[in-house]
Amino acid sequence: MANTANNSAPSKSTQPNTNIAPIPEVEISKSVLVDIAATTIGGIQGTEVAPAPMNMGEVLRNQSGARKPRALRVTRDGNSVSVDVGLNVDFGQNLVALSRQVQRAVSENIELMTGLRVSAVNVTVQGVCVPAVTAAPRTQATGSAS
Image (cartoon, rainbow, N blue to C red; front, top):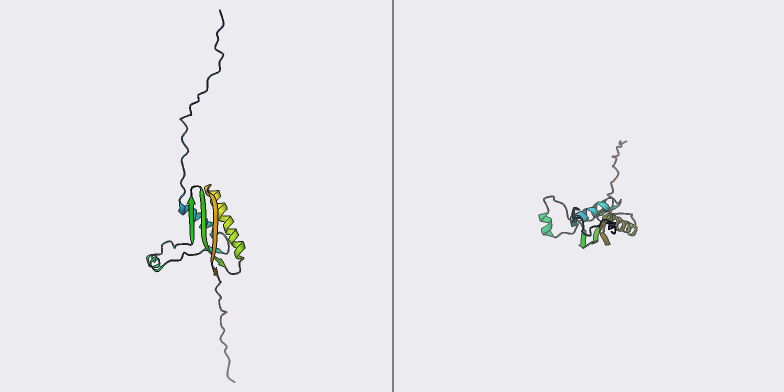
């Protein structure tokens, strides 16, 4: 009689484990991308996002004090994002260096916070903010007639 003991290893199932929940997709809205860019720019000293140009009808409709339109636009194509921003810059700042700093910071923050690839950050300096000059208080000369 031959020994017919079963020495085979237990078979592994080739079927996928159906107990694992699928990874949900996360949708990131354009307004979130705009807020990330605007907050990043607001943190860079000497810059601010310029207000968007408006026609008369938009001005009249927007008198309620609602959120003012900004010169900031985000375009998304799949996992790629491009940003167009108009800046107001403080007088005396190096415009090229400040624009590059804005490009780098906006790109890094959007990529870090969303995982999306930033293909371009286009900066247009739309205005220079000149600090208000305050006049020295005038002193009134009081003289006596002699």
